Length: 443
DNA sequence: CGGGTTTGACCGGCGC
DNA sequence: GCGCCGGTCAAACCCG
Image (cartoon, rainbow, N blue to C red; front, side):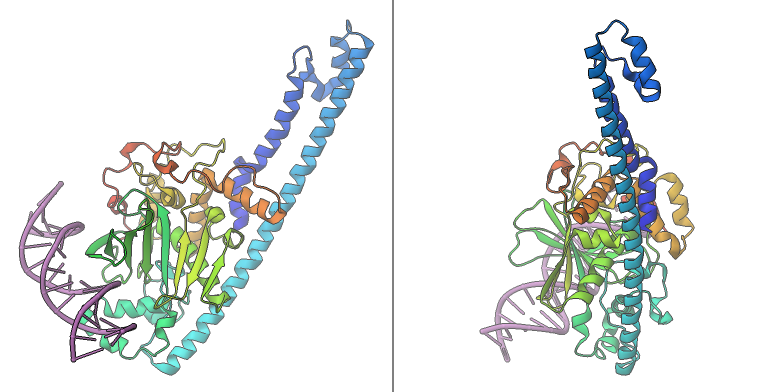
């Protein structure tokens, strides 16, 4: 899968940049005045002599030396280019292996949990719930018993009781004591001035509370993309830095998600899966290499995911406040693909990329309820269309090679989201941000 | 008028 | 048992 990501990238992106770079290096040598070596590439010897008939022998020799040097440099760059290609292939293979392992692990864990749960109670599906995890394409998760994600069950439980809040006991009472330990929340920290990040889903606010220790109120939202969807989220600004918006998701969607939400879901699921399966300590952290290596979210190049078990239930936190916003790359985003939150344009909107405002051709895809196999492809398309992907890829390669990242993608522009990012879309994208996602529907 | 938001009330968990 | 606090409900309100 990653291969496709990277492959897409090298069609018009990175590899070509390297090649272009070598050419430009080449050209830089040839652009010196009085050295008409535009011909040096093809038939340099002859051209050189022709054009230097009036030059001294010393000048000729000097030109030859420079020519040799430039050719050497060209060869070196070509070698480097080849190395990068091989590295890319290696990354792709590693990703494939990782993905396979992850899938197997998830399936095994899932089967084990199903056994455990059946031995406890037939109604008990309690499991870590993630906002739109991998079961996105399985609306009937509660009955199929073969949910793709270990996190499915929680939401099933919530789904069972959510439409009828007063009937909670039929499931809650049967919940074993260990259930809360496997209920997971996914918290996303991102810089945004918008009251709520646009994550591709449709939400309805059902409450607001002042939380202790934070002057900013906490808002409660419920997913309204499908009747009875159990997913809820809390939105609250960070007390320390009010530009940071903390969005906490809980539960699984019982309906297909648009790509925007799916990409996010895959990331959170990946992070949660890794964190939950990895460590028994109270807090664990996975870094960008893990996320990138898994291919779940290349934007995570500057993202840290942490798992905190100090809360009543584990909370996976994706900290996107250090995202490589506005990486100094030369590629410009496709103008036809506006970014979400055009006015506020925080980090996460860029992270979520284009799918939030779905291009017209993709809106049609939405209506067709794309098959599960295409989810990652959708994410892939979103990723590869974003300029930051290249930066993330560079960071990934750099992290593996142990070399420095040369493109400044790690710690810059926390606030560039509202300081005129070049990726800013036309303001006509949507006049009302939180509702913008309602312009498309899977139903 | 329908759908979304606001906001005070209510409920349950938890610590003292 | 009591109070605090987080989460949810639902009536009132707002808006297109």
